[in-house]
Length: 387
Ligand code: GLT
Ligand code: MN
Ligand code: MN
Image 1 (tube, rainbow, N blue to C red):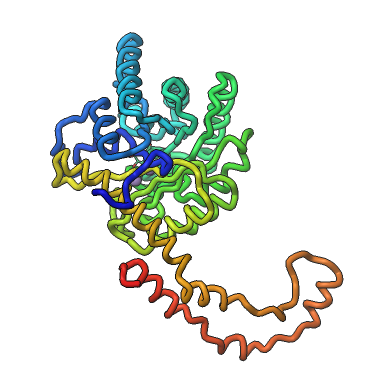
Image 2 (tube, rainbow, N blue to C red):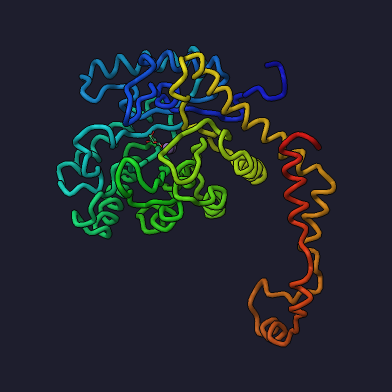
């Protein structure tokens, strides 16, 4: 693949151990791939050209490992990362797999489960810090309900706040320098998950003790599952200074969590997303939280990983082309070119009176064609490679 679409470290492409290590289990069928030991996952990612690897505590260290086993495993993993020049930008904690979390982790009704969840997260933070991670993702997959008779949802929010506040203090206390990135999802594995959308977390964060330490980790599939526009969620997070991380994958709306290869389902939304991230200069990791089809062996997994990065780079190239296209730019510029509009950018008595006294040619304004059909067609032609 000697072309312009070769991943480089400055692109900051990362994958979770659980992504390339996904064994193809689903609710109706068992694993189709053998386990991929973490050190081999690192080798596979290096071969694909990735920059970073992310992990849950238990992707690397089994939940019941002894302290000495833990240290041995971590040492081996660290040296594999060094050998393959792969960094660990983000760490997270598994608060969803073990049956103890069946009623939630930070929001569970049993205070012992809540305390265990916080303790488990503190240990996952120790592990992440040891591996050099500076971003800590919290995805509350089990924080939800099948029946809302079980607890008041506002109580769940209070518990979640208490836990995140505690974890921020722990990071400060240990001088880990973590930024927390909260990841929303509307449902699955719970019937409903609290904090269903990125927007919900953006409303929650300012209520925390250390809001400056906490942002979001939006995932394409999770907003698409809810039928929402992912780019709009990302843009709101970016504008609020809260886009600490991003989970790239793909998903058809209204289905179970598909976690498809980036750009493989909704190529136009993927294009607009890449264009946005590049336009604003998003500088964080571009993390692919997806997995290969169940039909694949590990060769297919390698192709899957390459495909995620390659599609991103192709779309980035198309975005540059879109910006350089004179006809497209003329159309974009012509939409907002009315210079005789009254100024209302900042409120003052003078411009209040001027605005109230203004007259508008309402019918004329409504008649002017905006040429978005042409604009979209040209955008599609850039995307389809015929311009
Ligand atoms: C899990 C989930 C992802 C989260 C991961 C982090 S785990 O695979 O589907 O969206 O980002 O906990
Ligand atoms: Mn997902
Ligand atoms: Mn995710």
